Image (cartoon, rainbow, N blue to C red; front, side, top):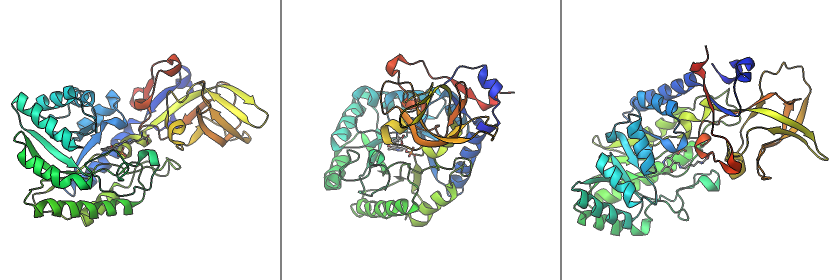
Length: 388
Ligand code: LLP
């Protein structure tokens, strides 16, 4: 049942704020992505950082996806949730020794290595553990993702990946490291990318670097092109499922690869964002000198994206009869910060204390980025399949 079909009486039995997950939409989204990837022999590792809610993870795992992790705890969580270690990738610029050892013991599919120093540390720890680590070298391709600067990762000024100037040295170090085996190359240029030309540019860079390594006699088995496919925050009902066909088609068409080369993806947002809604209750309405405020029981502690990235999330009043006059509200939370605002001048039907407000497209980077600031309560949930 989608958010509009949700019975307000049901909500009244529950405490808000809560994250509502439309499990049917999630299943349909996963099926759509899987179908488009399988058709082309592509592999998807779900980026846990987008959402590691237990029920969400269970469903993703049951559909046969791999996992993409950025901490030892995420690696452990993936294993505990049933993802096979042989489908787990581990990225991040700052992997601690403890995290590396955990991943080595689990014999994960690949470490996405972000520096020469990290390569040497993994080699040393793998030797200590008596194993061989499989790695992909993360290359910073210097491709502009044309997205918010906080979520652009593939430019020279970003901290991610091995800079191009160090690749010659990295290749030599790899040859000298007995406890590390190079699987392939890894790239990720940013998140919430809606312009397919960005991915086309990425393919061009991947081809260049693949050739560069092959010319030097290095075999590349895996091309991991990261994640980043965006979703429609403005029209969640019109575009509930991203166009996975168009996305994978770009890579199918522009990525040059041999028969033995696998193509891997690390999608997060595109798989989970539209299935989640933050449901909140109006605590107070306030007519200020210049503004009308709707003060909600949810704040930046439950959904940080608007405060952190000035991100847009569609805001709707639930269960509205359509008869109320529409007025502009600044929709704000209860946290003691002026940035605790979900939207300014949002046109909504007149609302009252006790009305329910939906903040849409909150399934990715929503509850995972929640905090206990102001000693807020733990996040609550409601799953569509719990409702009879
Ligand atoms: N792979 C790597 C190496 C990444 O750094 C990321 C995201 C992904 C995959 C998954 O990207 P996705 O498919 O979800 O775009 N908190 C921000 C987004 C940060 C993304 C960080 N990296 C937000 O709320 O927009």
